[in-house]
Image (cartoon, rainbow, N blue to C red; front, side, top):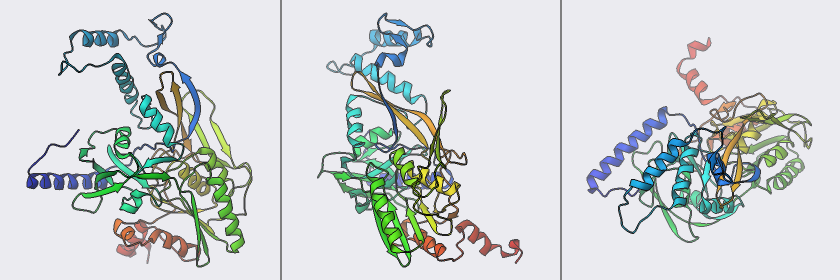
Length: 443
């Protein structure tokens, strides 16, 4: 809903108070969940009848015997039909609107932000976005501590160029408060026609005031791979696990081999994920044949699916020669790659805690054009770590502040280069403890 106009002084004071509250939330809260439109794995394509969600035998018009008793549901439905008085003589609530609202309530009751009911219009938007080319601002958003939060701006998009950063909390979208807003509602407000402007008000950790950022929408072509030599270290930045990621990664690795260096950094910071098969194929360039890359653990009695390396290993890698850079914007397929290389001891993971998007969604298309995106499995790393439970912990924890981003400083990449050069690089927490309490180490 729209925010209520306030006197300037009162509104500023209120926002300052909210900013301090958000800072408190981020200091003590945990990053539990998020949404990625167009970046999750679509395990299967199915069709179903909309009435099957309510367990109704359409042919007989009866409640199926092995389903929950829905007498109270229909009692409330009929009471509303009989007694509800609309606020306007011209406004009515259609049967279709009520049915879709009931389904949305049912889906929301599962408490999983990745399980969504998409009415026909939203379903069409979703299908457009997973094609990899759409109009918008170019960022992944999710839910963090019940707040609409930026997972990561995509490389070279209007969001990144405007100064949006991973971890930014979106407080308002075109002066509409995001308090209590579902992620699909936020996405609809942010997206729009190319050339139009969306105004975002954000909270950023470390800032005392909210920041207003206008962004001009554009056609978003999701970037994939960039590579460069820094001294004697080869760096491959992988921005998305889309349909062309494997082919572009193969070219980058060929350039790495031809460079003659044995020092490699795979940078998946700000990578919101993509297709599972892309993650498996790319991981296979670093692991011997048959090594487990990821396990899909299903919620029902189905047998778990184990995905293994396909034996495309470029060379034998070790934690002394290969670093994977991660941060809070590394999610989904990016976490699969980092987790597999970390667990098998072929890479050292440096950076910050990852996002923790470790689940598989199945897209079920319904007869009326709507669809249900439902979580059917969880991803486990080779050692059995559930990616959904807090993400991956790097071997060496190095932070990157907003001020450093603005100044175009990169202590995480710098640490990776120094590590590959043979220097001792300590996690910040341990280094700080050592500096403050050297006597506890026996020195």
